[in-house]
Length: 287
Image 1 (cartoon, rainbow, N blue to C red):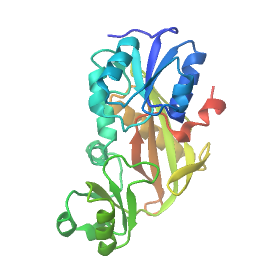
Image 2 (image 1 turned 120 degrees about the vertical axis):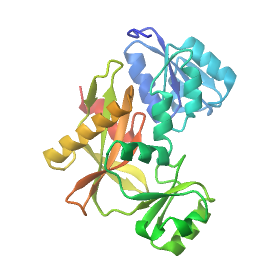
Image 3 (image 1 turned 45 degrees about the vertical axis):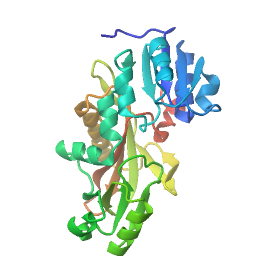
């Protein structure tokens, strides 16, 4: 449907944060124009965009405008409604597509996708109602981490729980939202891989990043990660396989736990269908 998009074309960005601003800068340096849609009048990306639409992501007038004037639209974070992406896809090229975003933006569908495709993840169960605390054999997943199934990021929307009492209190503190209870896995470290897959299915991985967090927020990335070459190769291969299984188009990050329990086995923490903070180094370190 779409051929190569040449410089001079107008591209769209849903989201006006720092990742969006980096996209705008890179696109403009290559000769493209960018329209940014964001609800904040003072958004970092909106400040430097060729056109800035200040509106909510569900605003139909704003969505019509961005779809009419842009050849292609992307997003800087996964909490944009997949339904919005689906609507835009009728009028212009969307990357990543709604199916990939719908899979990744919900912890339950994400884990179901990973498990169905034989990717290694930590043991988990789903907590939808208070009654599930009595019927889901939750003790098998304790100590663990209770995470809301949607809209959690940077350590938000999750609680560390040691026992059933902690779990009940945590579920109440998270407003009885639908949650995933993940068994706590002792870690050697956390790593991530940013991959990009083209419209023709070519997929490439950036070097593996070793990530250190403070209060759930990425603080330091060390590249290349201080892991054996075989482990780094396995992480890159796995990230590429996930992009292929999703039939993904665009930039994707896969976060991994390196478990101390199973001889440094790689367990997938989550997938992020967007540019990722652990890939910032690539702006200056990679050609």
